Length: 249
Image (cartoon, rainbow, N blue to C red; front, side):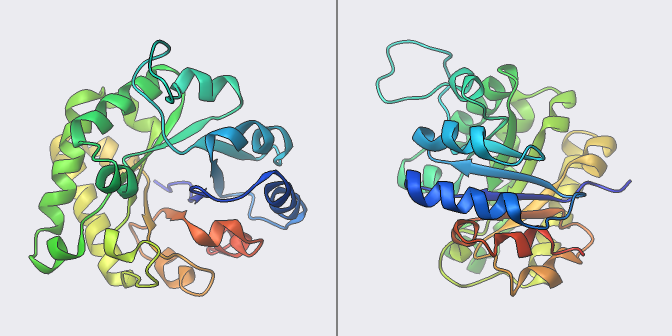
């Protein structure tokens, strides 16, 4: 089956009202491939601004959420709150959450369940550190991260999950996994899903690449059989992000 190409932009902790209004206006005016699903993740405080002004064929995501719908959790934001202000998606398990804030595989899985229950779709991030790649354990690390989610969600939930493979050593460093390296890991993730979940889920789940993706390096990666799109960091803060959206044209 042909999987719909998916491109996500992750603004991270960047932007302000003025700069994001300008950026969204540039995206709204751009010629973008209509056959690509595009999702922009904004800081919590700017989700309503982006959701209310963004072109209707693109969607908005939160960059994280908590595991409860409401309560005495100072500083946290629930998936229900994200949905209420216009988000359709949420990014979970990003390496910056795992490595800077110490979020575990199990906590990420719990968030995934709660987000799906609230009606959000999930961009689930996995990926290895440089020392893990050099030790030859990339696949076991990625499978460990996925195992927690596989155990927590139902098979039908995978229709609402996009897996983002982000080698941590390539995020914001300018280092990029070669198209062949990305394809190898993506193909192995698909084999893992076939074994751990089902052949249907393995075939239908989109697996996208993240890690210093730019307009100059995305075209070759997009040609790989198991690369179904991109999760883009810094390059999503520029109007040229649309060139990545159009990578398959």
